[in-house]
Length: 56
Image 1 (cartoon, one colour):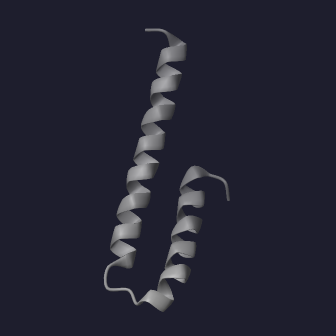
Image 2 (cartoon, helix red, strand yellow):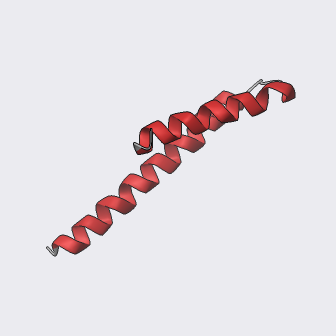
């Protein structure tokens, strides 16, 4: 199999996994959360996603 195709497929797969993890984290974090606490929860979720991507 072509190495370029494998690289592109693995990059796409890792992006989809991170996106799915972010959606699941947000859904579970915002369940039964008061509206005044949502900004801090979303900020914390953004930090987790950055850590998963290796940007931090």
